Image 1: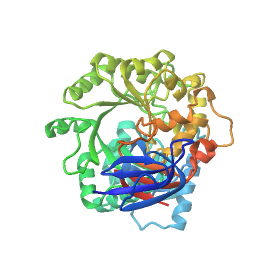
Image 2: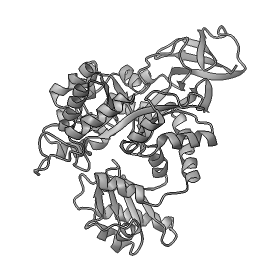
Image 3: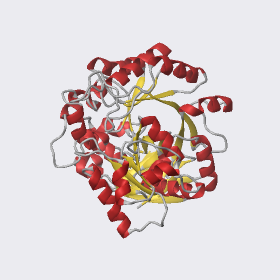
Image 4: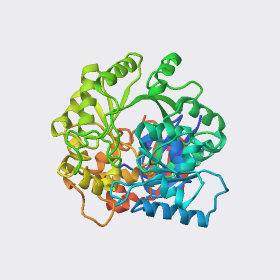
Length: 485
């Protein structure tokens, strides 16, 4: 039987110094130093704080692993600046002729100019270029890239469904290469204390993760989300949410079924009750109630739980109404703008608010411009928490880095720079933010699954900036050390 002894750890915030013995993937004993027994493997915690392992409840794993290798465009202040960043990167790292150039992370919600295929054509004539927005809802293509996928488009800037379908048509690296990138990304996640992720990749995640696990042991557990186009396939396979996939050693489970009601804030396609400042647009309704509700009902009747993407306040109302009519609980992904009367409905209906707190400081300026007058109810984590709603934190990587400490720090502080907190009334207590990043676990006790993290310092003693950069001593998943500093 596998056994592990964690020596000299402080169990929980402001906890006392203890030894913790693990057997068979569970905590077998917690006692004073030298009193928890012996084990075949020993890890010294050096007085660090032992906490439940961290969970990223919303990741696009393959896209995140690829984005870590794309030209970073997060600093671009205009379309012209984004093109300059691409050119500067290619000067330092020339691409072979004809190879698709990939960039990621631009946010055009505040740009003074508009992205256009002609800007890319003039800078890189004849070269295929594909640039992804930070929120993954916009794809900016050069004329050569459009030709590569057999499309014509007046601007080369594709939104929402067009963006996602074109993304699927772009050339990708070989399967084994992508799997290697994913393995590297998971190791990096384990180094930040992550023990489980929920993979929202728009792909056959069950097949992908079975293949990856067969190639290499995983340092994290994975919940495999079912994409809309795979609903019938999942039903034919007999998949039910929460099922442990066969031959996965308990590491792979079937996740929820995912649907989109609207778009995103940065793309100005989040579906809102009011219109966007200076326009007559209310955003984009991707899935009206008459289409949403039958899909939710069909999935739930076949044992699949529901995950509904809703960002604008009108989209969230539609999603909550659908949960009420279908009579099933589930989760809303993002919940970035809510009507005051809808906050309590999450708890009343048993709907989890699956949110990404790092988006709030990233998007505060865009929200101030395009959601002017509504921002007191934007990213309303404090209001949801006070209403008794279950919150779960994720990153939406690659929209934000796969690092739960970034989410925790953002939820607690409502800022990530020298500016004052943005709507500090919506901040959350540290203990609640930790629980939301730990799958709801609030402590470590005998009998618990041994998915754990040891931080070098007590998070309760750190400033928000310190939380964001907290050093990790060790990560344990299923009783096995997946990272040690």
